Image (cartoon, rainbow, N blue to C red; front, side, top):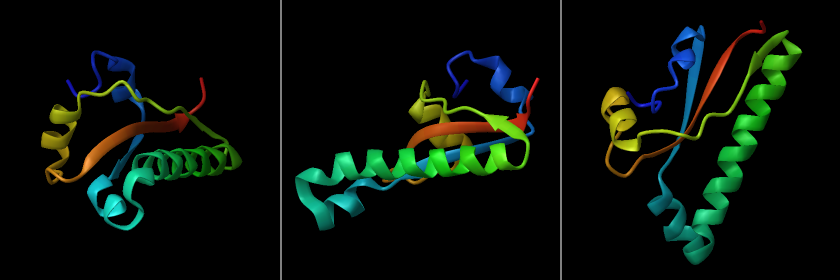
Length: 92
């Protein structure tokens, strides 16, 4: 399971996976690439959650992932690194 046993994630009507190609960022920004990738992923997740809230929905950022299993499930290229899953749905 790509979500490390967090079965509740499967109950969400929508799952958004945030992934990146760190090597592409490193080609431009060098040693700062890892920090920039993390900042951009966090900003993307925050914007997604803000929009969900504006629509009366809820969500959370899940970072406890099995990268290899998620990469296989989504057919991501080896260069693409999954960073987070954001389940979105109606609040309980």
